Length: 346
Length: 174
Image (cartoon, rainbow over all chains, first blue to last red; front, top):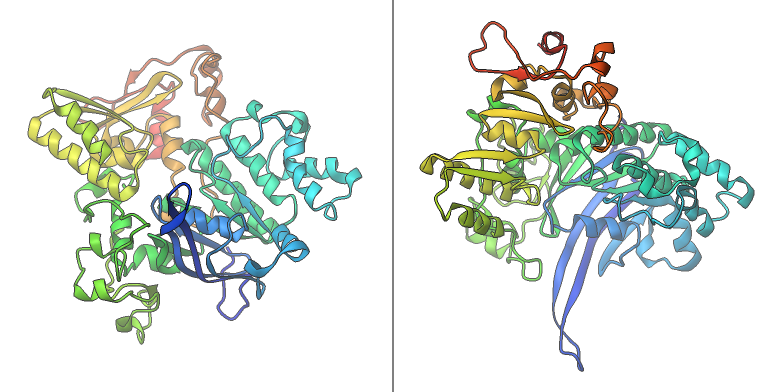
């Protein structure tokens, strides 16, 4: 699997990405009384041919990040640079050209395909918007090629989505994402609606397509073991921010942020032998509302290490001071004032 | 929090058996850990039986004593938790366990059970799993395997598998 090298130019650079949804009050005179801070300052890089996994629990903002990457939502602030160019400022023809290169695979293969359209029309629809990719006469053939690429029978082109199973529908969604030959695919929980036995088939397909077309993936999921399997690097999100990021081994074997540690320790391991000698960190309470996040470190209300400083100072996402001059896997970005290495996965 | 209320309601009459149907599927992992902790604690304190219905092989490994695996309307394997994870005796169980991403498989293809679960109005004859099974023989198409007793040296509790070739499956997975 290809890896992102820091020396290379990233294909996507995200800096200070923010999305606030206004909360309004009043019917006649609407006034803003606050904002849901769905995403509140997210930075990451994506390199050519690599997979960046983003994990986090519901409401942490990972899907909002995905929508901003493909321009389905406009950021409140921040930059998304595609090959150096900030796409949040683009409009018209320039925006259209960039959007072609960043495509999305959606979570739910039951609602993301129009039931009244044939598979051929669904996969071919991107060509209506970008006719330069496939001239009218060649479209049917292109769609059949795509069906073949994702492991579906090209003769199914005239069928409707309801004639397919969940796994097959997700393959249709992937074929649609590939139609315009994009360089970046944003996959938002692409297998979480599928059966366990079918998930593996779709993950293998995504892996194979990545090497075949040199794709870069942003892979968003809440299933930590699947993210680890497919990702070169992983970012952990909590309440609108990335709290820790590093290579898969750095995050899974040497986590330094308490939230990552709690998250990893909460994942049930499919091995009954691990039951006795596993330390579990049980967090208290629920995730706070993003409309009113805690001051300072957002995780402090559920953190067993929290001290006064955590309420006052927002910890920056950087290599913590105690690891800065150290070599080794603990020296990766972690937004915690009291970062400490702790192995939680046996 | 809502799931705690549901648990409280279920406990109100001090039952001797609780049936929890996918109690944590809609929850995030950190909350799932809280709820499973609570269930396990109540079970210990009140000496209740617990039937936990789930698709998550991690959750059962954590809490169950005995596991029954269902496929197309039937129990295809039943065994003590440690035994089933160590050496499954049914090819479906074996496939499920093999398709979980493991650390040493990074960069390789995941094992995938071929095909799809059957339509329940047209369950295949014989063993319902035979069209997807790597070990299927002619007998699997014609004869439905009974949930037969599995025996081997060192096995203390009862263990059963509905596979004509449970012995071969067990040997292959050990």
